[in-house]
Image 1: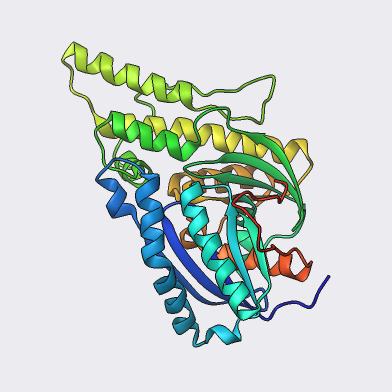
Image 2 (image 1 turned 90 degrees about the vertical axis):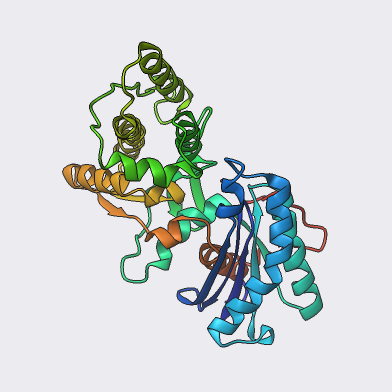
Length: 339
């Protein structure tokens, strides 16, 4: 273990957000700047990797300087740098890692590479008033990942289950496309679902008895497509709000059921949800209801810390820097943090 860095600069470029944050002593957020590309990619109905990486190149220096300015700091005040090393879009990750390596080398600052999913699991510790203890069961659910973990410490994380095909957020985007709704699909479907009947369609819930904590949403996506095609072919009116509500409830049923099952199987009394889909208010509501029923405590970060951000990278990086987990000049965009 090395001396704890007082101020850590976090840099996040795993997908289509360029983000930078400054964290003081591992628990006080000084700034958190996010430059989103959502409007750019919406035109294409999804993220275009080459465009994403180009926009990161254009934005990263400005975003880092803005984060420093908001924190009232100069770069010389930074004691360590943490950057997302993976997983994510390779081109996007290369931009962030290259920038961080250049900064670290030129200024003689220690650099650590953070696993993006690990950072999502640790985002709950950004909420200073309601941080969980260990152990807890963590659900990470986003556009690219749907996984369950048992977390016994900052560096003691065990994978319990993951998706076999589509991630939950990916399924939201694909169903939105089926319904002719704009990208990204999650917020749109969630909003329309509030006006729909969640029992209008009985869409399937994949249970996977051989690996009960794994997820699968491809069959659900196909069921939605077939239901929409059948209604259109019959000449009946398609009530999009009902499809959204029924689809969303099917996804959330699976997420909540498996999360509670994991906590009970592993005799863990605390549950954490993280990742962009954890911003979904219906998921938060159902998790809270079921955790209360089972006598489990629940911690879900505010939406700002659920979606991709550099604050969670800075926080996770702070603990890695304390442990002397440093990157060399030959580091690539593949996280070696086991998770």
